[in-house]
Image (cartoon, rainbow, N blue to C red; front, side, top):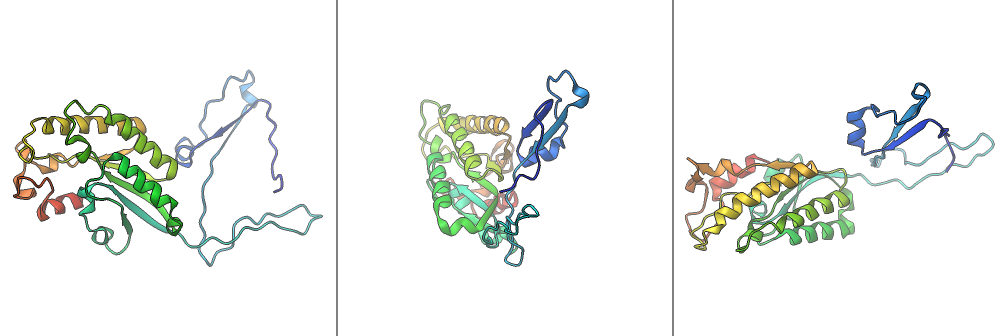
Length: 259
């Protein structure tokens, strides 16, 4: 590569930041502690991945000095498919990805019944390791997780907070430019297990989830209230079977509208 610009480090500052942060700040960064702030120049840079279509010029062509005729090129990259991922347990696994995409957006459903937080992390890592998935640029990841984690927690669920932080940070590491959405837990029935602590765990998990999302600056999709009627679990949206915790067809319609 060739040096295209040199910056004198004296009385200057260089900020390396996420593209979204740079767009918000628009170079309005603090001048630092320089005594001579009048001459203090502030630079900020960010790095973006650029994906070209098959008809575009390849990236990486750099003009050399006038006394050189060679140029450096990189291979042309294939066209990228923008997509969103559904991740987690059976609540999202039951949604129809094709209908959600409405024929215009690509939805990849990685959710699976019975999944817990560690399973969601593994699903993402397996997806990332698959060479066939390199064509996708993931714009959004929607997550429904926690129901299977809390169902048998008799001694509290506070330990799940660390697992949720781990999930968020794994996503940010694998997909640094992706928007992350966590779905709150739906009101679960108590009769399927005769365990009175289930409702208590649902509320506590949603509070923990809200804290994690606030701390990590990711989105939360609050679907809990949409499945209540007069403060109680709305039976119109759930299976009539006492042992089935999942929404019925009407309930899935309510859930799908959030996405």
